[in-house]
Structure formats: C-alpha cells, structure tokens
Length: 326
Ligand SMILES: Cc1cc2nc3c(=O)[nH]c(=O)nc-3n(C[C@H](O)[C@H](O)[C@H](O)COP(=O)(O)OP(=O)(O)OC[C@H]3O[C@@H](n4cnc5c(N)ncnc54)[C@H](O)[C@@H]3O)c2cc1C
Image (cartoon, rainbow, N blue to C red; front, top):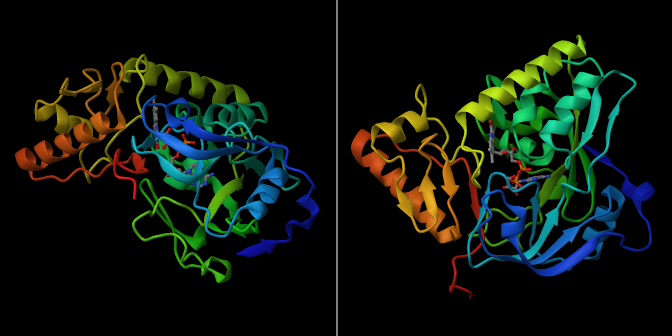
C-alpha cells in the first residue's frame, strides 16, 4: 500500500452538489427505498477530497455507484451518500499500456473504451449495469470473468481524504467477495462507526489500473454484442430489478433452486420473483424496500426448508427499518 500525497488535488471551494433528504429510489435500480440524510455528488476527485476534509469526524459515509446491487431500507440512511457515477469518469491509457479508470465509469463505457483501444478481456463489463467502484467492491463478474482478474492495482480514498494505492494482495478476493485483509496504518481509527452499521465506509475505491491483453478491437466489439444479446434474452430487463439477488451456491444455481421450489411469481406487495429468471426480484409497481426484503427472506427460508441449502444474498441491503429511528 502506498500513500499518495493529495496536496496537488486541493482546491479552495467545493464544486459538487450537496442535497438533503434525497429519495434513494432515484439512485437505485430497484427504484425503491428510503431517503438519505445527505447526498454529495462531487465534481471530480479533487473536489471529493476537499469535501471529505470538510466533514465532521463522526459523519457516516457510504459510496454508491449506480445502485444496481443495492437496497436502501425504507427508514433511510443517516450520514452522507457519495454519489460517484457522474463524478469520477476519467479513463486513459497509461504509458505502460495499462488503462486507468475512475470508479464512476460504467461497465458499458469501460468495455467500449477497451475495445476501441484494441484491448481484450473487458467485454464482460458491458453487461453489468454498475460502475467500476461497485464492481471492485463486489468483484462483479459474469460468463467466467471477474473484475479483479484484470486489476493491476486500485486507488482508494480514505474517509479522512487520504488517497492510497492498493495491490490486489491487500484484499481477500473471492466470488462476489472483497474484503481488505488487514487494516493498514491509516485504517485504525474507525471507532465512530457503530458495529451494527457495517455498510458505512472508512475507505472506498476511486479508480483502478487494469491490465488487458492487446487484440483486435473488432473481435471485442462482436463479443460485447453477443453477451448483450444473451442478457436481453434471459433477464427481465423491462422491470426495475437489481440483477441476481442470491449468490449461486457451490456447484448449483440459485435460479434453478428457486424454480425447483415453485417460488417463481411469488409476490409480496409490489415485489415479485421474476417468471423469466428465478434469481431476479422485480418491482412490478410501488414496491417498498420492506416488500423486497420480506420477499428475499421468504425465498431464503423456503429454499432452505425444501432443499436444505442456504442461499446468501448477493445484493447489499443498507439503512434502517422504517419507524425504528433511535
Ligand atoms: C440487470 C442487472 C444485471 C446484473 N448483472 C450482473 C452480473 O452479471 N454480474 C454481477 O456481478 N453483477 C450483476 N449485477 C449487479 C450489479 O450491477 C453489480 O454488483 C455492480 O458491480 C454494482 O455496481 P454499482 O456501481 O451499481 O454499485 P452499487 O449498487 O451502487 O453499490 C453496491 C455496493 O458497492 C459499494 N460501492 C459502490 N461504489 C463503491 C466504491 N466506489 N467504493 C467502495 N464501495 C462501493 C456500495 O456501498 C454497495 O455496498 C446486475 C444488476 C442488474 C440490475
């Protein structure tokens, strides 16, 4: 881990947008959920660093990309959401041939950029409707490829505004699983985050260097097209959803188990298990976060009861239950 001195980034005034009491249904692909106390959309990385340095030491912070793997409970989120997708959008080819991509870049843009520069191995990003930051946090992947397979190193920003460069070895990385192995020198002081609120962050991704082999961009473009057609054919993309709700258990598929248990079309309020893909829950209209979470729990209990297999959610559920403010 190297610390990058961010002095060069410091500017005087904030240039981003700070809003209060923001409905997170506008920032999550399920189009459901509660309000965030504050949302800051930085102008760029330099502005984000300045903003973090203005925050009180006990302010809780959570980074959000495109909200495509996220459910914010109806009681909402205390603290500040950092909305990174429209902010950290830089991409460039480095002198060593790697590409530097900021955390707010979408999977689709990243895949197209790599193909345009005759690089291969980034095609799978095209079908994942999130940002690079969310994909690094989730180790998102599909069709046999995973985000961290192509990461040379990651750039992270601490809650205090310190910029770090981290190696893949700094993380325990697995299937939809990324955890910092050991808290570093600058990660020791997170006592202000209560243990019951694990989704608040002391450090988050702001970019990464990706290493991709050279190839013919036309081949990559054809691959992107073919992957997108497969998705359109197999996923209920006409209704708000958050992709696969559960991780696949070893040697099996969550969708197959859900279908086998007769749970397709099960509905609670406005949340329904998709007829097209058993591992998707769609918002058929007016779903609350509670509807969605109750349906997730019901599917989990039914599958466990009928097959003995415990499905673990892949989607991140954050925030507080309605009417439970302390
Ligand atoms: C139709 C559809 C298809 C999908 N297909 C796939 C698929 O094939 N494979 C797959 O893996 N996923 C898939 N997903 C899920 C989702 O797109 C991925 O998990 C994606 O990586 C989430 O990115 P995001 O920017 O939307 O993250 P968000 O949903 O905004 O956040 C997800 C989590 O990451 C954290 N996070 C976000 N940004 C950062 C950051 N900069 N630093 C640190 N933490 C951060 C958040 O705090 C949250 O805990 C799909 C979703 C949909 C809706």
